[in-house]
Image (cartoon, rainbow, N blue to C red; front, top):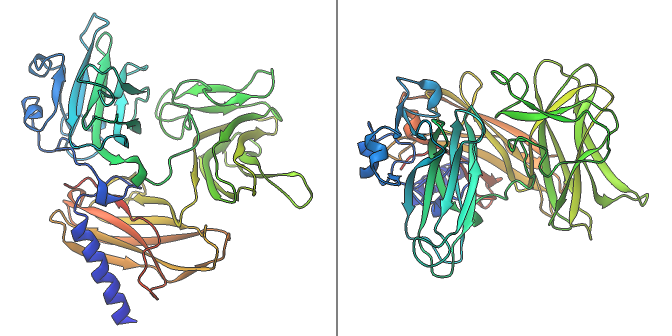
Length: 457
């Protein structure tokens, strides 16, 4: 057994050496596209932006006059998501004009889908944006543009997906602020081919950050389902600035999900908090039961103090390519937020928390707890082990923890695995943690892409 474990550790070290460009969580690190200084840690002032590839638009005077600058943790820690710095972009006062910082991605593949991600927030409303443009067409005035509005006043992870044209190998990332002195903050960028990411969230407007119902539909004319703005310190929402406040019993509030695969496992998760009675959400119309009726699954909470995360695993029927996600209550108020629907893989819902039990995207000093859900979408019994490895800032493997062997039946209930890495150094944020899933060490076979926490270059 010791010999087998040693071989696994050697394989992990090899993977760490080959894939020295780690990605954000859920990315295949071998194909990560680097941005110089993605967390702005090598810049001390606005002038340093140009040296690291970031410039301002319409001209670099925006850097010189302070509309595009570096926010320091030592000055305003709430405006930095991770590390010591973030990018700060402020539109001119007393005008409806805009200002941007931009970065040109190079060496892209034609006819290829990419996903840009960053931790972002704004000073209010929707007057900040994460934009990708000039990726499809001729020259820099091609007109192609995809935009994500930033309405959250606390940091939230935002993504933009785009597809290059048949002759395009570059694209511009814009961090933009619009109208009369509003500000956007941007930190910890990542860029990857979309095909390397685990399946994207199939729920539209999952955290209600559009500020309205969006793709969610009321199946009744009755009033009572509203979007509640987060007034102060997440009183209402689980994360971000908005959530769903639901207060009418038996009035379906639903989203139709299309484009699913038949005979395929999916995982639905969401956060809910109740008022005085049962409140929850579920999924239906994804398969037909033995009684000939549509199957419906749900999960609920009666917790009135804190949000609880609920997870439902389901398998689509032989001819089913759609499902309906719904929210329900029994005549009392409930709050719902942060819906996620993914095609189930072997390694799912991987989270990293620090010693204060706060969720993180990079390693932290001291204790780091990894929680991973292992599912079995295969056609045979699964025996597997979860492994967590910490690599320091020089990409040297320093610490490894492995779980006991777990067994998950075909289509059986997923299992949660917890591992703890301890005594990480004070510069741990400059390193990374990788979470692997191997078979039961019988064949040293990786069962899924590893999940990476960190932004190390």
